Length: 152
View 1 (cartoon, rainbow, N blue to C red):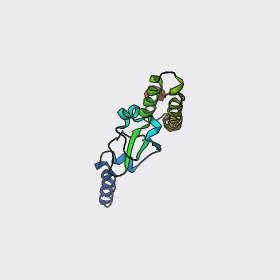
View 2 (cartoon, one colour):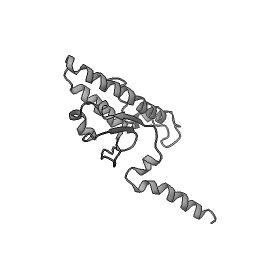
View 3 (cartoon, one colour):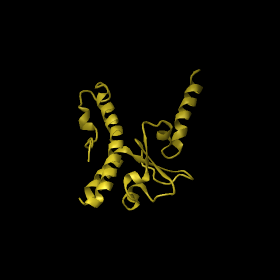
View 4 (spheres, helix red, strand yellow):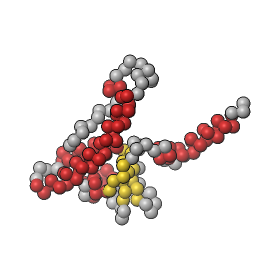
């Protein structure tokens, strides 16, 4: 009975960050990568995924949900790592194979190469966890989303 107030206090501290949208994932943030808006291509290409460009837009690739609404005076947009990789792959595949598009293609590939290690690390951690919990004897590769290719 002595521990009941302490337990309630600890639980309330865990619930408080969850009151705001995405607050819990920001309170216990995993690895993330800060990028520029230009890393996802010109605005006409990136706007469907990132929203309209602000005066100084910063993109944070992390493991949580997308949050592309501008946040106050600091224009920080949060995008999911796997969705970012999929977006970049789609945009590179849509680009016509011309010499004029080669610098853009290289920039998108460089952004993909910067984000990819985050997803690879998460995938490897999930595969290296104990086989006794939570699914005994199941191959974790069948449960995880497909790992994107290392290069585009």
